[in-house]
Image 1 (cartoon, rainbow over the protein chains, first blue to last red):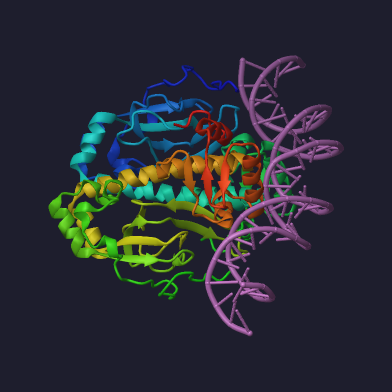
Image 2: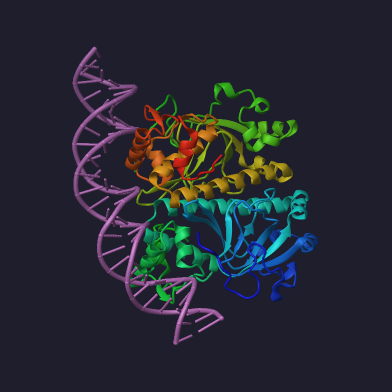
Length: 252
Length: 252
DNA sequence: CGAATAGTTGAACTGTCTCAACACGCGTGG
DNA sequence: CCACGCGTGTTGAGACAGTTCAACTATTCG
């Protein structure tokens, strides 16, 4: 099992990262960039004030494990910036990433204290964390917060089920194309994708080996479906072509 | 694409099945066998009375499609008996089953009128259906119902993510063993499994071909991990052995 | 500049798929 | 009753997508 090493500045404790709130983020919930996608999207001023009371920021450098499966996750959180990966690891080291959390996505499950999956920062990650107890109490007395969580959970469920088709039935080339389509959609930049993920992380998400991932990137580049600038920046000349390569002809 | 034929008695309309409530089920919510697992688990007598008002039963013979992806699903429902499969189908016919709904499981998403997946009755299925509008209104004014739905959705999400490991990283043999472990757990009979699913349905759920499924059943039988009585009834002499074969050493 | 991490490419190997033949169980109709 | 057809399941042989092992290149960072 590989050792995960910090690659950036100060902190190098394993699960407890630096707790200093990130510079630009001091401003508060009212003008938070991710709010429209996050749990707190529909909260009114009063509710936001309550959230301010119970929240704190944490940041994790790329590569760091935020929490290991089975360990206590002492907070619930929204991803403010970066990508966090949820993954299963089998005893023999086989690993499957089961979710990519991006800006606005919710981490943790109310009522469950321990993490069910490893959570790893794929890039530098900033979390907006809520202390468990007050947050769960707020949910209990604020029905629309529960409704928002339900909606987000069901979106995640749909995404997970869509991904099952990718894992179970698509070829390596289709898998890569599918991932690119999804990342482009989430990023909102249809023709320019900043991968962030390493070849290995992509492989773990797609149920492939990193060598196969690399070969398929080369093949897609060779066929003119994508243009690579370095290993992690992709340009998509023809979005429809990429979608066709992903196997689902109708994927707005 | 294969034609799906009714194999049982009266009804043979495609999506609109017989609407006569099933004989034994007339009795009402109070002594409903699946209630402790269903959405309505924590409802009080008054709420159950409201549910009675908006509910009706439907039954579907094995093999029948309950609703096609993209079509309107005019109700939300609990599975009362049987197994319903949620599945994706690609244009070229590749299919992936993304969920097995069993007794107590919830079908449909509040607020979404159209089915996102094909829903097919794997066995004879009985649904307890709720009319959309009144049910969604009940959720809106009954917070604990929403909480129950959230809890069920998150359980489904965990199950879907667990299944992603099966699809992405496990061998054919491990996949079969994993399915048997899960079915045994759900059925509550650790040593006796009634498969219900055909080899093809199993293949679609595991991301394999039906031939590979058949071969792996034969291999597991040959190695003494399972005993087959006919094609769809399995005896498990040693539960721990089966779990070991499934790849996850610790799977209570 | 040198070491370490990340990515690419090649060649042989292998698990699963594909195509094909055959066996079994069951209901229908001669 | 048996013959037949049909859906379902099993088994075999060859093909192939993706893995494995290995060498090499590119990039980043001290």
